[in-house]
Length: 315
Image (tube, rainbow, N blue to C red; front, side):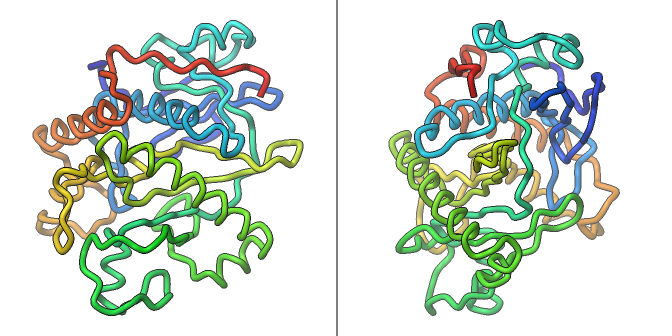
């Protein structure tokens, strides 16, 4: 596993998010570099998870390939895809990439982001289960009585939230989401989010995994075309459960940042606000193992042997 990367400092930095650093490449292209930063409860931890950014980038590229026929996305090429990169002018931040940084980087189309998180849930878990236990609702909408933890819904449910640059994303009721983006666009986002989710859920099931819930982001390119943007279907944005251990009525082993969440939940005296406590090495290692495990389960390939899919450069 490569040395951990907490942040990058290349030419043309325009945004540093919780995990990704974004650089302007001019024209209609950006370079998005996934660091090894990890956040929990919307707080960035001081200890990175080695190799996490590589997994996020390569898994997103993998999924973009799986769901490419459903709708267009912003990916032009992963920066370690030598075939695709041969057709791209190498300048600015691109010329400063090391081989390790290239594996965690994507060249993407610029897009105007739609400021809602498009969350799709197929099982009741996480914050949805917490809300249901408290009020019998999910995103303010009443659910049937008698549901148990990890119950499956009869069909995937669209539960959008606000998109916050800092602090907590807040769940939106259907009417609030429609008011925010307009009824026509809301319907389009819901339709596409559920369609993508169903394709990914079916693929994951074939690999012995349950895609529990996920969040998508969308934006418009310069021509006004709706694109799937950011990352997609990674352990940062999705909840995956192994099929072999699934059982209704209890918590499930989750192949994501759950070791970090569990350790923080048990920590006394931290109010889930900055500054973050230091993560023990054991928690860092356990989280790294889970990210590598879900990558291998879904792709069938060890990360060290993985090569990026070939994408055309005419997007």
